[in-house]
Structure formats: C-alpha cells, structure tokens
Length: 439
Image (cartoon, rainbow, N blue to C red; front, side, top):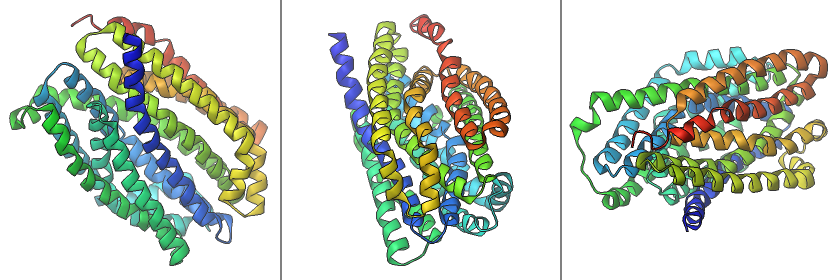
C-alpha cells in the first residue's frame, strides 16, 4: 500500500516537473537553432558563451531553489504552516537582494567572464551584447527560482509547470519574432530572455495565493527574521552555493577548453551540450520529486517512507535515462542537422555524438543523489563530494585533453558524471540511517 502511495506521489510530483524542465533545454535548442542558421559558427559560439555566463551565475545561486525546497518540505512535513510561509518570504527577499547586486556589478562580471572563457575575437563582441542585455533580468530570475523551490517543497509541481511554460514559451515565441522576424540576431535572443524572466515571477506570485490558502498559517515578521532559522537557511544555502560554484567551474572548463580548439569545436560542443541539458533537465523531474518526498519524510521522521521514495524515484529515473540514450543513438545526427546548417559544425558534432549518447545513462545517479541530499538538507556532504569530484575531473582534463583533444574533454565530462555518483553514493547509507533518529 505504501509502495502504491509513493508511486502515485512520484508521478504527481515528477510529471509536471518533467514537462516544465523539458521546456528549459528546448529553449536552449531554439536559442541555438535560431542563430545556428546565421552565416558563421561565431553566432552559435556567442550565445553559448553568453548563456554559460548566466548558467554560472544562476546555477551558482541555485541554493535559492534547492535550499528553499528542502526547508519548505521539512516545514510542511512537520505541520508548521507559519514556517512554510516564512521560508518563502526569506527566499524571495534574499533572491531580490542578490539579483540587484548582480545588476550593480554587471560590468566587471562581464569582463571577468569573457577573460576566463577567452573566446575568439569574432565571438567576444556578440557575447558582450548578449550579457549586457540579459543581466537586467537577474532580480526577477532569482526570485523565480525561489518561488519554484517553494512550490516543489509544498508539493505543488503543477505551479512550477505553469511558471516554466509561461516563461519559456514566451521566450521561444520572442526568439522567433526578434531573430527571424526582425533580424535582431544575438541581441534579439538576449532581449527575449530578459522579457520572459521578468514575466515569470509576476505570474508565480499570483499562483502562490492558492497554496497559502491550502496550507494555512499566517505571516509572522518575527519568524521570517528569526535569527536561528535565518542562520540555518544561510548555512544550507552556503553549502549548496559552494557545491554549485565548484560544479559550475567544471562546465566553465569544458566550454573554455573547447573554445581554445576553435569556433567550430566550440559550436559543436555547444550543440551536443544541449543534448546533455535536455536529458539532465528532464531527469531532474525525478530528482525534484525525491527532494520533496524525502524532505517531507525527514520532517516527519519516517525512515521507511524516505527509503521507498528513494527507490521508486530512482527506478523511474533510470528508465527515462535509458530512453534518452536510445533516442540520441537513433536520432542524434538528425537533430544536429535540424539545429544548424553550417556543414563543418555538423560534421564535427557528429564526430563527438557518441559521448552525448552515453552521458544520460551515467549521469542519472548523480542527479538523483543530489535530490536526496537536498531533501534531507545534508548539503555539507554533497558539497564535500563535489570538491573531491572536481579535483579528479580537473586532473582528468589535464591528462586526457593533450592526448585525445576534444575526445579527451568529453571523456573527462563522462568521468565527472560517474564520480559525482560515487562520491555521494558512499555517504548515502549514513544519511538514510539518520532519518527519524531525532524525531
């Protein structure tokens, strides 16, 4: 009976998240495709570099989503409605403050990012244009992340689906209008993202009202700013932030090393990385479900429910990852041709396609363990695992790239996915045993 209950809850939570998350890499594919038909690989490279900068910034601040999910789920599981509300307020306040700071320091951030990635001279001015336009949406984008985390924590993933469809659907439409219709190029892609990011949290705040009525409780200023709870939120967020920055640095190294191999390799890698993003964002639907279900189980001190949530979400995630691997094996070359008509980029991307085929099946375990650790708010262990993984990854890049060039870079990324799972997996039994010990 418990198994059937968890099965229903997993799909009720994961289904909307999967649909919502699919829209994110699809947006990346559209962004890449609309510039992939412009004359030259440097347009694709510029969007790849510009998008990477925001992936670094927003993923680095991913604690606004992940930390909020774990804390809200545990407050919900313990039946503390006032704290569920306070968790939302704290997260949104911190998100807007951090986003505003990013706008203030936008120029040095742009200079530093382009200096680190070091793309070609053709790419730099276009990437600079992209970043300088899209950065103004930072406060709204971070507030949206906090809202998404809270919705997942209170088990309302349908709201996340609605938010993402509004944001990414609007973004895709504006991409087509600005780039293909008006010919704005890279600037049009950035402007589309800016407008969509501002619209999403406005819509999200409207959706919040129904959940607040369902959960009950009241807004308490003293609880929102209560020192112990605020410090706990900051401690959880700090560890997720450090872990995210380390993980992002591995992506930066991937793009940067690929950029040194020329615009064609940079563009090919950017296309194949969109394949990885499509699988990752979809598989994260089950990771998000694991966050909500394990977080609630921890809040209730229910170890059997925790264990069953891990088992069921893991089985479904593996099945979906296998589907992605099969789909990329069969349709990968066709998808490359759809994304770009630059023949040298097509040929290069097909050469490295096998790496994109195998990554979903090896990366799924890391995604799932991330969700479990976040739900249990055992983020210090997740951070430590990422430190070890990154050190080994950087060593692999240093050894493999000189010997195998871009194949070595993709092999290092594959090893990164495996190492993430191994370094967290060895810690999982201790986390499971801790559930309910203090209940």
